[in-house]
Image 1: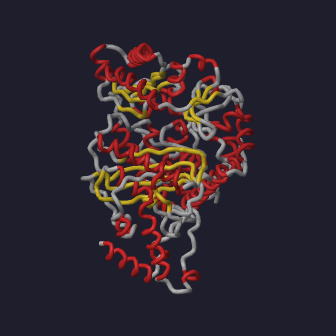
Image 2: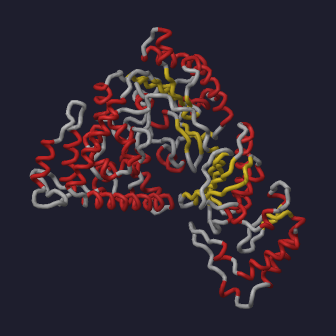
Length: 593
């Protein structure tokens, strides 16, 4: 049995599902004939081509070989990149990254994706005829429900500034308008102007790759104060059209202009044109806009005629289905490289193909993912403004040149913790969970969480994040660290399995001095299992503490101590500390108290 037969069979069934066709008797009759002598999967149907393996689908999609499967992230066109020589971009990326840490990490992720796809195919191939009929029935019901809930009464505008960061710098330095320019540095680019994009330079691209593509590229350092100044001006304009507008980021917003249209008698296209004109008058910056009956579709439309353009999608079911028919699934927010690859493994590359394959989707994806993909395929959902949701988390992160210097890294964490604490205090929030995010020099990303007493103090957040970092030693060279506060006071989202400060650190450490963290007035303890930044005046007593610990161990301690953790793994306290250590620790703590 070939998987292709099952994919096409269920795709045919799914295509039959429309509001005017809710019966599958003819489909089930054909299906029963194919399975009269077996309960398992249907045999290969005549005239059907063999399935396309995921690897081949990947190559056909991006023209790359298996060892460069991550390259599509760099050639996935953004606005202003029409006409870019994709083959040249691929060749440059391949030359500069082959065998490197980023390449190895992306290859590892691709291998995990392929493994996941293999399991999905195996699970799908094992479906019985009875199970397939059950899936068909549930899909019919779900599509009927979604069609009944389709709402075409609202008009949404998604406004997206054109190369916002780069444009802000160009206003301040007009000479940058005619030269290829990128915001960022050799490590990573935040955005690029449209001159640079013609050479293949784009956001989220390493600077060293961008320079190879465009030797004349000029780098400009990020200036968030500048961006916030212009963002504040933008919000003044947006508020005129919808005083409850939702910001996706500094440079984009969703506006429900239905009431504005009722008051002014303007249609969606006229409102979008006036909004864009007002933005340019107020800020001297240009923007693009998408007009559609849902937020999701409006965002897609805003990218249709960039830069400095707009696209209006008619408020009708036929117009929505026609618009989605040939739209690549990757254009939809929420569908990234991994999900795109999984869909491609089942020969689904456009939203039209997705709509024809909803039975396949229901069979191989989780209910949550299936619901999302169903709404994408049908063009439903996101018609209404999301209900006011309490902020769930607040965090900051920083990227830097790879380093393993603990003083530098911990100082960065302390600074991030102070930023997070200031915002928590500004919003009168107290967090009960601190999350540490680190990205290693090989681009591996890890996150660790710690439960803390409710607090918005920089010292508490800083110590928690530094503690989490130390528990990952030896972590090697890092290129990014982040600190996030969440689980705000009053929310009942505690997890019984989550670690707490008390069971992660000795009481002696928990009762450390209230002195603020200062890398210039501390001593970094290199003792295995410690790694604290100790105030210089306490260094002697701290060293005496470790001496007492060593003396408490028997002579064979060196042979019995736990091995150092490998990168990416964690060692529990029991693996690092034997009973005698716990005993002496409790004695020392008792004496201190």
